[in-house]
Image 1 (cartoon, rainbow, N blue to C red):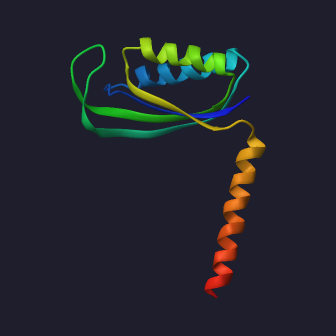
Image 2: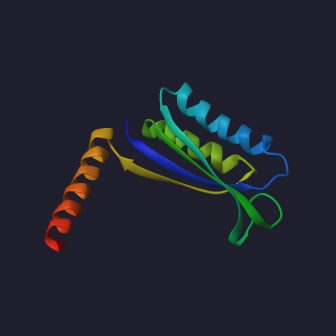
Length: 123
């Protein structure tokens, strides 16, 4: 199963129960389809870089959060459908980090090896 990272911007509500429910719904959808949720991170409430509008009035403030998960491509398509239909979601994007965890670990090792050789040249 490929490893993905989703960044989501949602409308800001005074109570976080709306955002918590959206995050829970997304994570449960992935897990019910046999995927694995690796981490959920909140970036907090931020001023948007520009006014955004989806299924309602323009908003200037949004809540940012990320979700790291492993899932099949068909589950990813259905998750995109959920995000598209939800009126709380302003924008989202999904990045494919790798096909396997081993691929990502190898990329990290190569970067570390490359950095240590550069450090040797500086000394």
